[in-house]
Length: 420
Image (tube, rainbow, N blue to C red; front, side, top):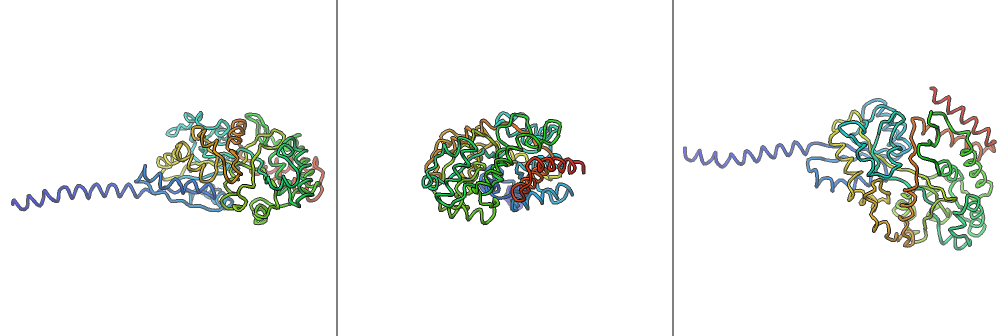
């Protein structure tokens, strides 16, 4: 009996330990599926080991597809209610469409109550993620302050200064003529770049890019006409290469010095350095957009599908990605994604020189730009409007169509598509 009691004494702690291990194992079995796209997915890759230290009971499964494939897959998943992840990465162009789908959690409502965190983020980010009905569809992770990247070596050869590039849109085009004549390089990849930046520039808080406060299209307004005129002027001046962004020709243009500038979000610096044109280190510089323009170009968010099986865990992960200063800074350093979280905009880091940009402390430029970008609402039909405008501009540039006629037709086409 004494031996039996001793054996019980030995096995009792062992039994308890095994039971605790079983509980821990059950917790570790919680797998959080995160769907994202390059290079936004790099932030998740950085986060996984850091998050695992805080939450060993959570496994992060990253599912990444190319930008277009990801958003197409998420569009289908939201429509059918199947194949949805627990956490969905969303680029700003799709926020309006997804917000109105009814398939995402409203982060304004309990248990999220995300309005309490609003002042911790750049002021224009919450409006970007808010539907016309007031639904907060996602939490902002990073933003894209509009930036003019330019090859200083090419500009020096052409006798063009940064001031020449940025004083006005007209001086920008004239600079392009000098660059083309002196170096053979195109100033911009495609004339549509000018239009895309212009229609987003210097709007006021609450103004929509494509629609007014009542949801009526704005394609026939002077802003769109001027944007088309600038693109047309660039094409006629021969300063654009008619090269589509993200094409092989686009990346080759950067590598071979055939493209002298690119107007886009600040995040391009990371792409140029990591894979687009790493051998051009030290040759690029960054400047504010021409004519004193300030615009948001891109931006990434995280949302929770309503059919997520792990909403509580999803929300904790999103808060970590968007509101943890160390995580935001790690993403900033990894992919040059300017943080949406104000507290992550570390002054010392912002002032550090960027070797790829010739030692320029370019983040200080982005800090200024980010502070001036207005809060613009998103709409269900923003992506549709973008497609319609792109087609109309192509008709002007490629077919010589009259700008006013093209915009009038685009306005009518957009209205018809909204009525479907």
